[in-house]
Image (cartoon, rainbow, N blue to C red; front, side, top):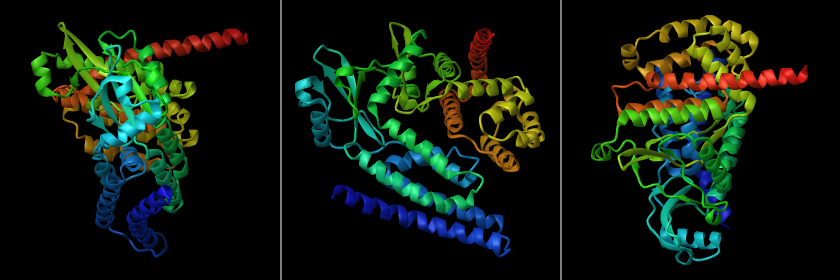
Length: 451
């Protein structure tokens, strides 16, 4: 009965929001393609603004999967017009928490005993609530402070319903973007959502990244407390700190903002370019700081959104990024082919377009970079992509780009006078050189074994 209710209710909301969007675009598309009527740019712009707002309202109302889907779509400059990406970029993954009675019942069922029997203390009010779960602070019997991330009891049901509705809508909307198989993007998004809802997997990622960053001084990753971790509850050690963008706390604690920026960038460039395993959601709420005995300490939280690059894909990311930094057009185009953006033939057609883009943005001075209009750059990127027929940005690369964009935004929030891209360049180069050496050693070993 519960599934039937949610299926009907959520299906009705999706239909009443998406059907008008589809019919409006279908009419404009049909007029342009089959009736030979020229649709003015102003008409397209008005339609994009109207329907982006309609989808935004749907995501806010549905929460869960639609919030995260909207966030991912906001990065798809290869698919969506600026009006859509701009509006959807405002979606925030923050919701009202579930009442304690619901959490209490769920914890009792998951952990096999009432929370008051397991923990010395447990806060009834959550310290953070997002689309898929909320966090409560507790203290173990041995005195350790921990964070309990609890998945909403009905979120798996709602997610399965929402994904089924999106899957049904995909064939209708695919006619507007025939060069891209939306079903492939859907499958990638679905897998990402299902992984994020598996807290045992999140616990494994937390341990993995904690091990990878163990050598970074002043950077902490929470430790997983296995005995209180299940498929829908994850228990980790609690880090007492402040958001890195908390201005009052930064001044009160005497924290060095530039040192914070450097440590964040060093940690993320290592995760992305050396390990190929990175937390892909570096917003301020997921990075805390404190000053302890005069020493700055950072903590990276929440490993629900983690991307693991396959080894070959990771190698291509490294080679392509390195080619861009050293302005190697041939290497960059080869990387575009290796990553699945374009075919070899399409890459050659794209050569003059890529060269022009490099010339426009590569040789800027630090002062010029600070003055860049990123909205215009986004339009230029979209225009460049539109000129390259058949281009498709893999979802893995979208998450990579989203992570770098969020890091740049975080640096801007910390100090708008410092450009994060410039600050990051030496760290990226160092990480890329390490990975290049690692790849060269692996290739030499394979050649030796073959010989």
